[in-house]
Length: 230
Image (cartoon, rainbow, N blue to C red; front, side):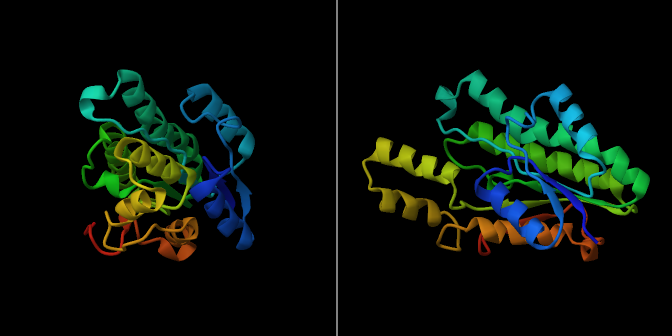
């Protein structure tokens, strides 16, 4: 049975890979970018989901990051990461929750990060906002317990995306390392020893969104090769 799937931040990187995987399974997929649905704008989110129709699977994928020591993290940077990474997940989840509850079926999957489990240097805003996103997911899951709707999260280590490429560029500019050395340093942060591919994250999302995953609720699926025990 074809489902209606919404993947926020779905125009590139992890989001595009997730959208492609659901489409290949025969689902109808909406993959809005910021121009289509600004997840930080309450009215825009409400209007988008009202026009989308009954959503069967919501993937909260939209996310941003910046890097700086706490002493040089601006309030604007802090707030913008919380607005997209945490508040965006809240607004989109709230927009679909009543409909899912009324039909007693649905899947909500949030794309978080290993930074939602541990603290990394120079990522205070990102780390805190991803912790918030996972905490919100768990609160939603507690409310959904015993229903046909579930809420879970995937928490990947560094993935081969534009966001990671930007991180590599920051390391190069600040340390003088080569791009390959900078990428190797990021890969070494996880036992996996390499960057994840977007398709690997897409598989994890599709697993949690499967009809057969009805017993999985309030969980974080960590993709790092075995470093973090969720």
